[in-house]
Amino acid sequence: MQDAKKKFFITGANGQLGRDLIHELVARGLEPIASDLGENFSGPEACKYIQLDITSYEKVEEAIKLTAPDRVIHCAAWTAVDAAEDEANKNKVYAVNVTGTENIARACEKFNRVMTYISTDYIFDGTGDKPWEPEDESFAPLNFYGQTKLEGELAVKKFLKNFFIVRIAWVFGAGGNNFVKTMLKISQAHDTLRVVNDQIGTPTYTPDLSRLLVDINLSDKFGIYHATNEGGYISWYDFAKEIFSQAGIKINLIPVTTSEYGLSKAKRPFNSRLDKSKLKAAGFELLPTWQDALRRYLSNDSNKS
Image (cartoon, rainbow, N blue to C red; front, side, top):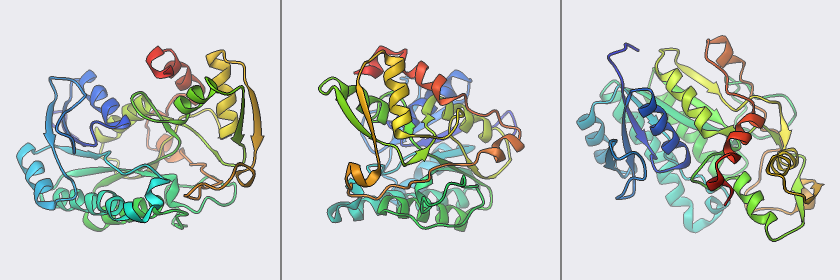
């Protein structure tokens, strides 16, 4: 990507990742164009904002034509995994995660734009203990959310030759619901918590991921990548232990299996390990450790409430 090309169109700009991505682009002197479904934008006032319903191809095409971005980073998604299982929501989930993604891919094809699609470990069946590699095609999503994210990937591959697909897992960041915030909130009312210890993965901190997304979009090293923080593979129980340790909160944590914890509406993968060696091989700077990311997250008091 040439230095003169510096305009980025961001979908889902009011979301947890979208907001951090906008701030990263502004900090690096690049030009973000924010878009989301809502009328108002919660990001930097100087950033151009377009209200956009990605489920309408005509509106997506018009937005891409009007703004003429060099790169499109598609962060918008339905991410409420359990709610996605409700029959009343499935049409909405599909419209956002599949139709919306297809619309963006089609518009990028028409105007010859490079697209980045944010995907997930949920496209795999979550079995075994071997880290999933970017080129693995053992697709067998366990829930409807995972199925729609997989179909989004397939749409990107169908319409585009030059694209980035970045699969992430266990996301946390400011301004959104996440495991860290949930643990801290629950601890205010309980002195004992049961946390699952047989689902294994690695957290992804949105400010760190935002830096990587900009890095890869300033290159032409197209393809599929896996991106989480470094620091090793852990269970949700391990993550909770570190959260309370760093926060200085004394609480009785009890490790339990998924079956002991109780079934949720959506099945969760046991194996969310993502192999990130392709990032290193391509010359990209890996994300810091999740322990360091958690420390930075907790250093902002607003994230603790």
